[in-house]
Image 1 (cartoon, rainbow, N blue to C red):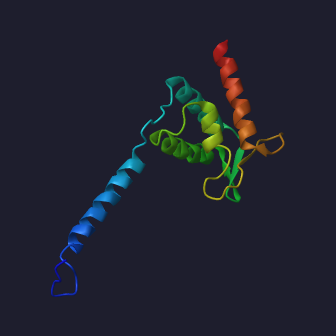
Image 2: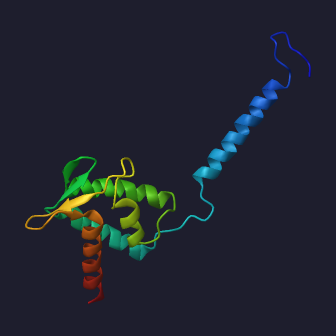
Image 3: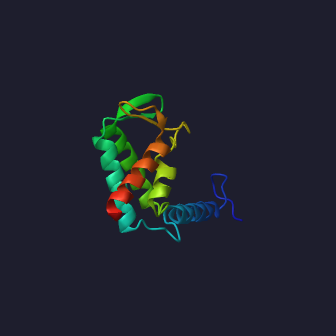
Length: 140
């Protein structure tokens, strides 16, 4: 390799470009899942109904150390839903509950729900119960 005047070889700029291109390709591959799953329209309808029930409820939702209103919780879970759908990581309502509605993806702490005249419960239990009610209503 030929030495340049600054103690570098002439192949170093090419190596930097190649490394940059490899990094770009890896980034693009990570950002575009090969077999991205899609959320069906029926699952989207169920999840929307579930989020609406949470948002209009008088229940409080616990995450990362504090209690939040149902409408704040709806917005929080909607943000998580949007991310999961964009990445193709969920296909149905149960996966939404498991992936977005069970625990904080930041702290790993479980979410909880407390409603008037009811005992506090894990959010997955509350969301699952509400999903069953939605399905029963739709089947009538």
